[in-house]
Length: 37
Image (cartoon, rainbow, N blue to C red; front, side, top):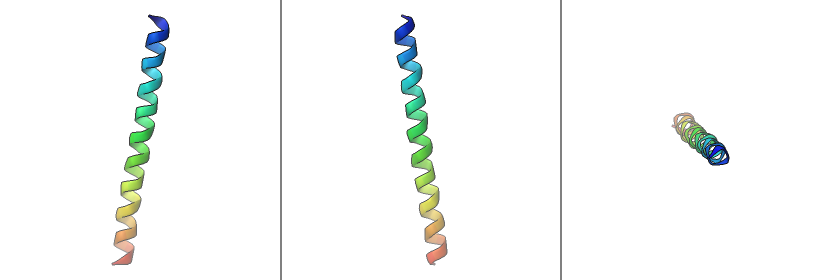
């Protein structure tokens, strides 16, 4: 049970990381588009 909880927390952390990276990529893309206009 404890190890399962640990795995769950780790996967949530990884998910959070990928979400923030994805968000950064989107914001950078929009910044680049604004500069190229």
